[in-house]
Length: 334
Image 1 (cartoon, rainbow, N blue to C red):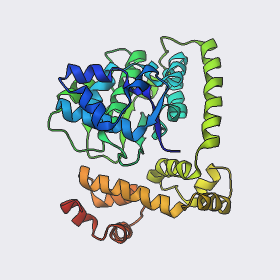
Image 2: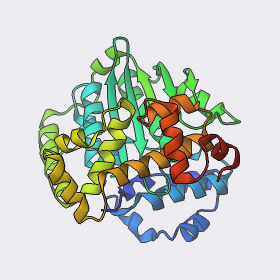
Image 3: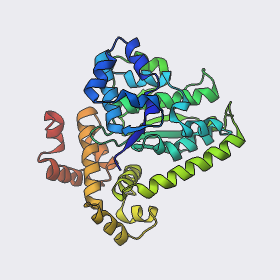
Image 4: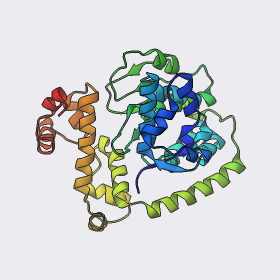
């Protein structure tokens, strides 16, 4: 199934474009978006088309920070039932877990992870939409939206410990500084928001146990239906993105997470005219190209993040796929 996103993601999108003196009709025309779909929040469109609209909005308004600005306008009900359940949880930690577990019902190309350390919790976001993997517009939006949701429980005076971005530092940091009010790190290997461990114990202002029970049942049923119809290639790609930074994305590990043996997984992927190696190589190349063109990450760190123990192994792989060395590609873009 092609990655899709609910039209609820367009909440306040036209209004912000017009506020910033952009041409909303031009966006609809250029993207081929059928505006009749905006009559409902649960209509599904390709995530790729939504990101295209974000990029067009950035172009027509002259705001490279359009996605980030949009995050300040939207509310949690933009996520539909996922947002309502997150809102009904007792604690902020429960809300974070809910969004991490069910966000793909809103945007099936999104990946949220929660990593706990002794002094902090790191919430990371990834988006694997075709053609626009890790696009800065939607990823910056996610960083801003996560910060806004946390402040609804912790108060407007609360700030993250730090926010991390894959893309280069923007020429104008004004909106980033105003929205996050904390240290900002660019040219990183992931998009993430760091918060204090204790912050997850904050009480949710709209906690509702009865609503939580019914919504949880509804979302679990939806998730089962979606999983039953999803192609194994998509599931494998999703798991590779999650496991790759930690070096645990072997074919055996992915098969175990899908509750099958490796040979069964290989047959399932063969039925879809692909293989584990093909999917892994495609993801590695997409990420490598992005790192090389849009960041200043060192080749050594890049190789490690992509699952290579040695830079030489990554360089050989890249040359075999691209026909040039990683350094040459970074210099020329081809």
